[in-house]
Image 1 (cartoon, rainbow, N blue to C red):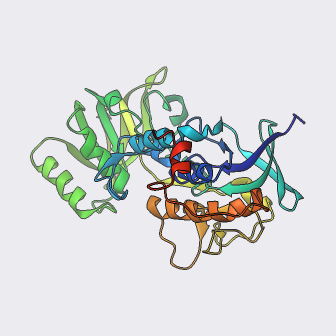
Image 2: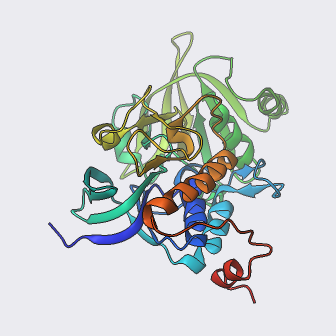
Length: 342
């Protein structure tokens, strides 16, 4: 076992809610380390829709998933959090009151007084279509997320799916792709009606193609896609020329090791009380999409609120002898000094 990394707070999950929690903790002089299974910060915002606009962050009319991540990273710079990416916390052991020893799948060990679970829906991975040999094309011609739109410029793109992700990226990539074909198993869509209307208008104008059916085979050598075989709803077989495929079949969410940490669970979510979003284990908190309570709404702004209240209770565990005096960043010279405000 490696030497333990000691920190006030260990945050599991470096998505927006976890990042903002580090800001609130930092204002109260608590140091934080992050562990995230992804190889980058930002959680689902950075992994699944880095260039997709978000419209419901207070005070910001619109921002991309990556833009929000970048802004949060800039905001927490004064507090110098440490990130351990590409790792997953496997075990959590209570060794004090409170004090936890957390071990990752890479053998890294942390000792902390407070543990914050901000892991979204847990570890997630896109659902793979049941197409023989698709693995050979993944990462080169088959992509489960759009990380950089420019990658698809002048490409013949086959988008597969009928939900919001499929329709959103059909519309967003249409202006830069050479040709877009949307394939869905039926002529009904689960996406926003306005998006469906826009797609149908493009099809009617001959600016993109809509096909009904399912992909049964892919063709191409050395990971380079050249076409897809389609089985239509009438059992007809046809070929679509494409060099890129974007399947949007949703995500498989796995709670993972959290289920073994002695925390109460409810439908694969972590129930919390709403004064500080603490679990049934004192010193372990859950914020963001992974928690549940009466009236829960899965919005980033709600996770920010949860992180702020969590930090107030966390302070009691980290500094049990220290009285917490609430201050505003707008008027507190000591808080402004921490933020480097001149």
